[in-house]
Image (tube, rainbow, N blue to C red):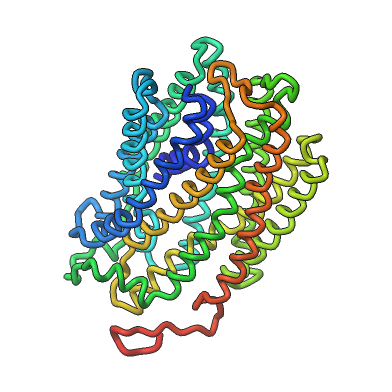
Length: 465
């Protein structure tokens, strides 16, 4: 069911800026247009995401299942928006005003699609069994890793198509539509096979959610507040890791530093290897995370263990780059990124399960689960992280005068600036994740469910649970 959402998120986190700068034929405009679009998008999201969450929670019960209904909307909207973002018509590219309108429209449409993906709320309706929830999130993770492995072939397919089309922009668009079509063909029938839990389909009368209940989440749900801030910081690890990895591998290992020419065939192969190097450790960590959780006992302890892994690996990667060693050997870079990916992968199952804990906690302290709102706000985090990383990379590319020939992929900027550019890329994909990891350790010290001896005050019943 989550196939189309996972594919769409991969496009936005890994290729949005790369497409605009290297494949869309926009030149330097590609690096400057993204910050404006993303800034507007985040301002809209600050109001729109809580509103979408409230719309989900306030919606009446449906025979189809209201969470399933909104996930269906998410699948439809996300599919259309990604195809639009990565298929900019030629006449639109020649008009800056129309270009901004086109990208902004489909970007906000994508944001809306993410906001309606009530996956956490749907799983929460199946009951409060942590083992079942963990298994469901593990299966989601394994699916995401598998999709990521398949997604690693994207640039190779683009290069193969371009050998016939001779236009990287069109080749990228055709490949995008192909991936989205396959994802849609999987997600839609799978959604129809999902059964929503009894907590949302039973015919008991329930008080309708009001918009002020959204504010109550921020007033009473300490678990949500801490986890929201923690995920906002911690998930930057993966976002930053993937933000500049494609750029670094392209210019450190696939380009001639004297001419700026790129070996696109080598780039395609290395891109696939890099994706596998990232995905295999994440697959392994997803399988091991339930066992590690059983050993350590608490989700927070698993998160902290993963944080220390990414912290030390990120610092080591940065040091090797500053010493001039990293760019000499792709194997070293791949190994370090694989270790960081393993640490990041350990966080997925406990982090996602903790969102459902937040829904449980909210029901205890306020009498209403507000699952749709909490799901929407969790999606807001991902969009903020993608926006921040893209803004940061866009700023770096603008600062160094980054410009690439969209027909050949060769570098058109000052070749003397490539070494400094590589340093900036490592700061983003290694040093910043290390900083986010240690910050996360301190944030989760405030998590109210961080020990077995915790109590949840039920204000609606006046009791201690």
